[in-house]
Structures are given as C-alpha cells and as structure tokens.
Length: 107
Length: 257
Image (cartoon, rainbow over all chains, first blue to last red; front, side, top):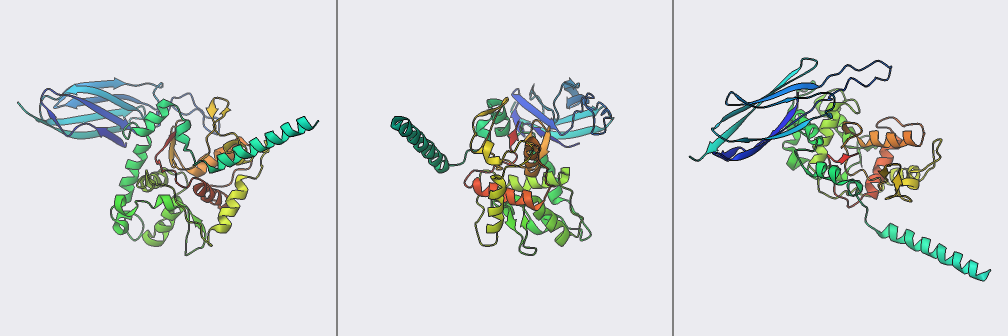
C-alpha cells in the first residue's frame, strides 16, 4: 500500500516533532452497493501503530467513519536517533509498512 | 412610453457593458470559489490526498515497462526538469497522427511507440498517477496552448460544443459557467469551469480523476449522452477549455468538492 510520511530528518534532543502519515486506501464503509446492486464489503484500515526504537508511541483504531485516503498527524518527543516503524492492516488482511530514520542531535 | 423604451435601452446597455467587463476580466480558478477547508487541503502538499497519486506516478515514471524494457525516465530522465511546462502546453496536435492529444493520450502514444507496451486504460490508477505526476511538474505555470492553423478547427469545434445546448435539460456549458458563474446551484457555487486543476482529487469521488471524468459528470448532469473517455468531442472541448483558461496557473493535483 502506498503511503507518504512526513517528519523532520533531524531534531534536537527533547524537541517536540510532528509526524504525519497519509495512506492511499479506499476505506470502504460497507454501506455502499456496486453497479449490480451487490453490497461492497467493508474494508478499512482498522489498526495502525507506530514504533520508535521498538517502543510504541502511537496507535490508531479506525472504523467506517474515516474518509478514504486517511491522513493522520501526531506529535512525539525526539529522544534518540533511530527508526520509526509504521505498520497498518486493513479488514482484507493487507498489511503495509514504512520505515523512516530520525537523527537526534545535541546533549 | 418613451420613458419605458429609454429604460429598456439603458438596461440593454448595462447588460452589454457587464458582458464586456466579464469578457475582459481574467479567468478565475475554481479553487477561489471553494471554501477555506478545501483551499487549505489543496495548499498543503502533505494533506492534499492527490499527492498520493503524484507519488505513485513518480514510481511508475521510473519503472521499466513494455517489451522494450524501458522506463519513462530512460528517455526523459528527470521529470522535474524534462516535464516542466509540458502540461501547460497541452492538449496539442500529435504530429504523427494529426489528432488532438492530451497528457493521457501522449503517455499512451509514448507507451506504444517507444516502450512497446499496451496503452493504459482511461481512468486506470496508473494512467491517472502518471498524468498527475507529469502535470504536477508544471504546477504554478500559466496555461498557454498555442493557437495555430493545425488546431484551429479543433478549437472552434470545442467552442461550439461549449455553447451548444444539449441533453434533456437543454443546457450548454455557457449557461452555467459563463452566465451564472459565482452563483449557487443547490449547495455548490458554480465555477467558471476551468480545467487547470486536473487531474484533481474530488472529495465526491474520494480519489483522483481526469478532466474527462469531470466533463462527463457535467454531461450526466444535463442528462446528455456522455462521450467516451478520450473521444474527439472531449478532446476538442479540453483544448478549448485550455484556451479559455489561458494564463491561469496549473494546480495539479487540485482539490475540489
């Protein structure tokens, strides 16, 4: 699944940084019908988690009320240089993963 | 009696003046009619969901395709350099076939001629992504299609379609987008109907769609027969729309309701 992630490449230690993620996904509500009148099965990204150096810092549980192509933003404190791992899964069982490096400077 | 006639004459004069002023005014982009939230969504390059298609287009640009095993980048190298300003000059006449070709058509011509690949289907995610990526390289540049002998008949045909009443509602494009631009149609504000944001992300579609899809939606709205994607009628109309929008900056990927 295609996703875009935005966070600063470098941050000072203790700095509050904004992390944004946008995922291309239809977020099918399950309330719609196709041109032949058949119900379209619900398929939304139901779980998304973000780990920062193996510690979970953000988790979202989404339902049918989310628009297509969800875009999420949260804030975190830059503690150590390392990797942020974004993982998500939809109702159809498709998984997505993105990894982004963050360099932390200063004492 | 004469007073009434005089009044009528004054009114006619006023209407004519208004028309003259309207004609002299520069074109106004559809985004200026949108609400603050839609404008903010388009202006923020991360929040703008259309950028997902641009990102996907960038991947396709660099991916090998076809029996010649060639990528777009293999010939055109860096799109931000080679494709800058290209979308502002489209649609153009393809010199080999003599037909009007928009960005989608040009991509498919390139696929067949140079990559020996099958043409991509209209409104397929990959064609939309590639088109959005190519058009995005001209964002901010003014629409500037040339008027020349080769495309003049198509421009004139496009203009005729634009002012032709059609469908069960018996409406022409001009009835809404020229005579009533800026006024309300139910909950929406009617725009001048420029195509400078396309391929655009429409909230109604929850995805990116081409200008032809948007035009077909208008045909549907006036209950007229919808021309096929990439048909001569829509291409001529697209060419005329580009001429009409001359000077407006491209916004791809735009965001619209």
